[in-house]
Image (cartoon, rainbow, N blue to C red; front, side):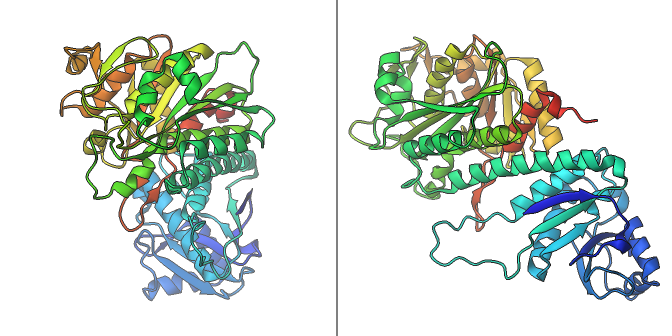
Length: 501
């Protein structure tokens, strides 16, 4: 869909549809009042008759409003003016896009970007509207033989800003929003792909295809033979029970000088996780195709980065693997020697993501990174702790943790910090190895973070547990595209592009 910004009076817009807000109780927004005056009270008469109360999400589509150049006027309920917050604003935008898409309006001018959202400026409102619009129109129908398309889908949306001075801010918001949306599209498409198609090799192919589209992106892989030479025995052990070979894919983005240390994004890429010998219950096991949500989000963030052409160096490490039960599969009781030289006693083969990640975290030391962020659908315990609203954030470096939390608030892709105190490390004690791959039931997410922290001593590191945020279950199950917005905002903030005027 095409987006643009302009600054103009609502009554002068010649469009298929013009979108304005109405507050509770039956009170026109400032822009709607202008239309009401031009139409000689047409809108206010409708409200007096009770056609629209103004409750959040209510819609009223009007045709041929007197003295208005636009063919249609869509009145959008925005709730109580003083209570309009970020969450409600995004919900209103999503409902508006859905309504426009069903009315046959192929283009529209939207004045909702002029609504007052506490603590948020024009840049935020336009960017969030772009992202909400794109996310709301997403469908995954590649594998369906009969595809349903809207009769006349919305193709162009213009956001109005109060003054011409804010046009550059709005244009930048659209640029950033489209880049994030494209990254989320890649993330969702890859994560939604079934495991008989999306294998570790498929992840590598997607990364290679992406690198082919941008001059400053390059691609390489670490295959199983090289992993064996490097001593990545924990990573290899997890994939031993699968016929699909493990592949570590690397995307190198060069936006700065060679001597500028890179940021490394590491994504857990378990393309299917049956649990191995410690097999999972069969109920909802189909959702274990989403255990590569971290890898998908790294691909999405690299896509957004390449679109934005930011002046930084970033490496995306996609740790592709499949965890299956087989005669060659690793077992509870095995002791593995990791690439770092530390040994791990396997208590549960379903705690496999940390074994793939620990060797990958050691591998990326060779790039002398400034920062490493790993992203993983790591623990069900994180869903118990935070539900599906916030990703779990853990870090051994306070400034990095604050950066990520700030990016999460800016992007609306929320994270919440969990502690990594030394007291939690004791749960990983093993009588047979340097550590176990599993602590007790208590603080399971933190225990996993503590495990990973033992492999990150040579750089600033943070861990995002996205088990609760990477996908949604139920009738509308599917990948969400998170935390691509958070990661992209973090990268934006590391450059001048993230500084708002």
